[in-house]
Length: 200
Image (cartoon, rainbow, N blue to C red; front, side, top):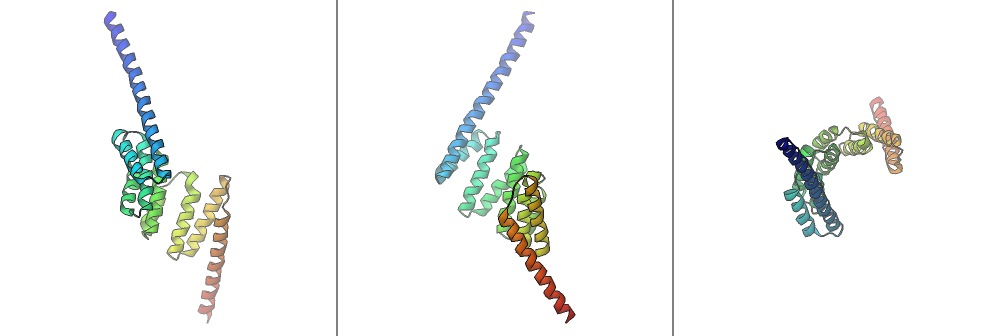
């Protein structure tokens, strides 16, 4: 009986210690992330890198390490170090345990790829986003890519999908609606011109 009770007490103590340790680690990681965001808002690049490295090295198993990578990616974009930004985003998109962060990383990666005119790769990243919450952003970015590649009808369809999805979530985007209407009018005008040329 004594041995059994000792084993039970040890198990309970071990469980409590594990929970306490996990809470402590999470709190420390949270504090480091707060300092990271403060450094980023103050444009303290050295501080950003220091706190990000701390999160990656000491708290790599927490969600804060993924958030640190996303922040590093922002910093690299601002400093025009696009390959390094892409590396950080790809890591989060592939390895994060949180689907939400994966989706955010995929959207940001698609934006970066589109800016570099890697349009097919950007569209491929957008195709991986499945959370309906992000569909207004995803479809607007698709529309922008289609405009950049001269696929105006596809762009209008994507913009209209973005508007519809935004309305479903109780949001509006006047600029997007104006952009859609102008592009639709231009597309219709081009279509009419092409028909006249064909008839001639």
